[in-house]
Length: 222
Image 1 (cartoon, rainbow, N blue to C red):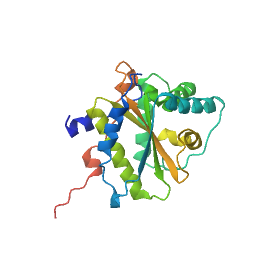
Image 2: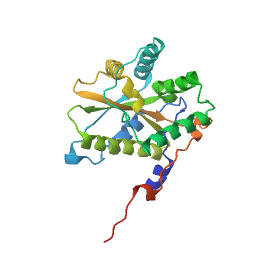
Image 3: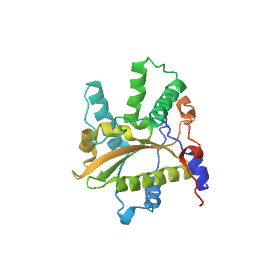
Image 4: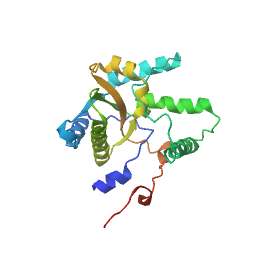
């Protein structure tokens, strides 16, 4: 698979089959992804791979807390609290498109909550990656982390797998820590669902829009 094919076919999917993903394959993906660039070669990413009973422990723990109406305080703002346009409109549009795709009307709060809750079962994917980063890191290292994550997602496509990067997991930092026992000096950044796409799921037909290069690029030649 060409790099451009992997980029163009990568989407954040929200329905996976239960087909097992060999952990040797996950290891191979991470082994190549670690060649991602990082300033000063800090390599700030930390990965915990969850499958089988370990994955289920996390899924069950969050489900129990959601059923009890509990909530936790995220360690960072996934989105800026005062988001402005065009970013605010883009975020609203992708949400509207997603719920339209699965037939959940704007006023159906229960339906939206049910869909949101699927995040915390990795959308059915058999493998979940929990991504943590040392708390001393700054903005530059979060960019490094993003490049590593992109490598993981593109390599997944090379092997016929799909992914969904999930910042939604940042809502449950204490529960995740209780399950994966990451060191106190690390903070949870996100999760990643990894598996084989459910080709029958209508939600996977969603293709999000992208701004044209004219909207984000200036060419200067003199």
